[in-house]
Length: 230
Image (cartoon, rainbow, N blue to C red; front, side, top):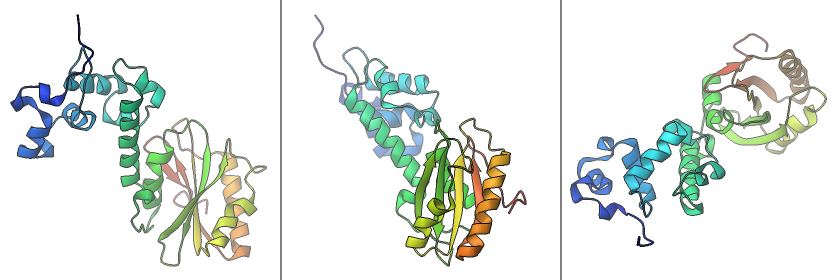
């Protein structure tokens, strides 16, 4: 009869324990599955934590795949309950925040790539189109990011009032518009260009510089400023 218990890292031979190897030799010597094992700590009644971690990575397609996993995806794997699913989701969200404005650090936009980088991990895997506005002060530091709309972009739902309202509240010197293409292809549509031209005219009247419109794809982007549209 099997006992209702789970294999822990401490059940492994001492020289195979990821935590001890990490502390003795440094993080760089550990494999991806060993790093994950340190975080999750316990396996299941039939599988030790290293095997479980390897299976999670195999199911997700590697570390990058973890960013696309949902709680339901994790809990569909044998040995993953609510607690481990929550740990994994928290881990990937921390990673996203390290690579974004939400890390809490001051972030300066000096070029289109800077704007794309702070939005990429948040937006590249979204299943719907999200329109966001990045607000900057006079020195081009980010002072806020605001969701404007969800759904296919068209001029009938993207109203200049909604785009510029928060920027006015925050006394923004300039804004950058950002939206994603769920297809992964950031090539601008005619509607994207039309909206950009319309908002550019409004920005001149309001005195808030509209400096770029970034379209996010899957690990790639297009800047309409670089394309010469603005």
